[in-house]
Image: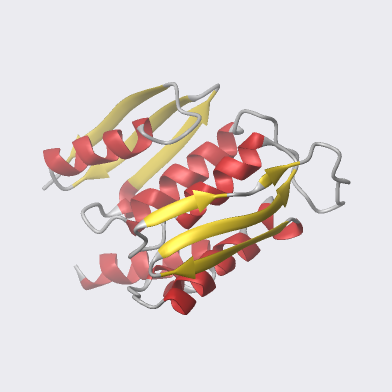
Amino acid sequence: MFINKLKLYCFVVLIAGNYSVFAKTNTDKEIDTQINMLYEQNPVLKEQNVCSKTNDQAVTLKGCVQNSAEKELAEDLASLVEYINKIDNQIKINPNLPNTKTKAAVSDSLSDALISGLIHTKLIVNQSINPSNLHVKTLKGITILSGSVSSLEAKKLAYKIALETKGVVDVKNKLKVHP
């Protein structure tokens, strides 16, 4: 049990770069810090002028991105932070923004890799699911969940999280339950 928790901790640190991103918080400043850290760690958004401003746990996203997929990605990442009551996405879309050398190319529909990454991040943040034995793959908007979970409820929850993620058109739930 301890080894599994240690593996999960190491995995979250590896993925997030800083475990405190997912720590519980309740101040507006902490919420903004966590959202901006997520943006800085994202290869698409770190090159954009996107930021958050929180007031009474209501987050306003501002800035400018090249397309609707990037705008949705900013909102999806912000929604991973706890204690947010509302997100007002005021990010503007300007397709004429110059490309940067390090920026990943993203079409108007979220790329399969971004979808898989977003689902996996949501599964990591969810405390009801242990994602250490879970694998997420997306091809043309169809997400395949494989690996094992500890209960039927965790299997159903993983399916729901994947299905509700923007860009997903279908989910194939191949998770096995191993209590």
